[in-house]
Length: 193
Image (tube, rainbow, N blue to C red; front, side, top):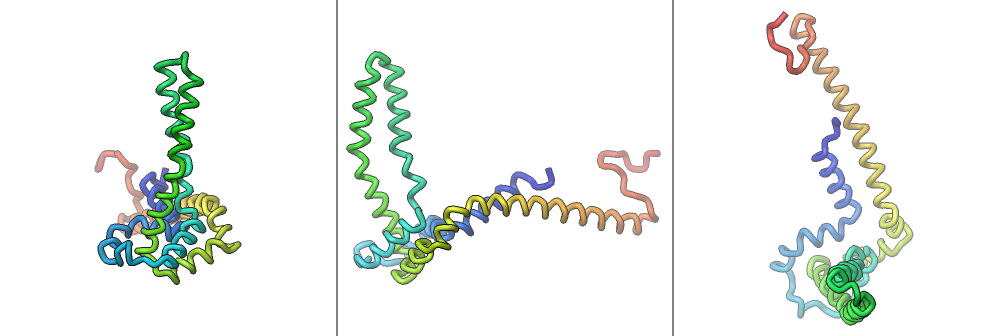
C-alpha cells in the first residue's frame, strides 16, 4: 500500500492533536508547566473553577470513565474462576468495593483541573470552556472522529495521486536522460538482454 502504516499513524496523531488541541497540549506540556508555573497553592479558586469548566467542556477525562467498571468486571472474573460456587457473593462484594471507590473519580477531576490551571491562564480557560460549550465546540467534539476519518481517506487518495504523478514525471525524465529507454523493472539484472 502506498500510504504506509507509519504515514497513517502520523496523520492520525496529527489529526487527533488538532482536534483535541487543549488536551494534547496539556498532556505534552504538563512536566514543563509544573517547573515554570505557579505552585498549586497559588492557583486561585476562580482559576481552578475555570479549569474545571474547561476540563468538563472538552471532556478531557471522559476517556477514564470505564476504568473502574472494567477493573471490577476483570476482578470478578478472576475471583469467580477461583470460586464459581460463590459467584453472587463475589459479584456483590466487588460491586460494593467499586461503589466505595467511585467518589475518588473527583480526585482525578481536581488533579486534571490543576494541570490545566498551571498551563493556561484563567482567561484562556474561560475561552476554552466557552468555545467547547458552544454549538460549534460541541459539534467539533462529537464530529471530530468522523472528520478525522474523512481526512485520512482524503490524505490517502491525495498520497496515491502525488506518488503516481511523481513516478510518471520521474520516469518520463529518466527516459529523456536515458535515450528513450525505460527504467528496468525492479529486481531485473542490469545489462542483461
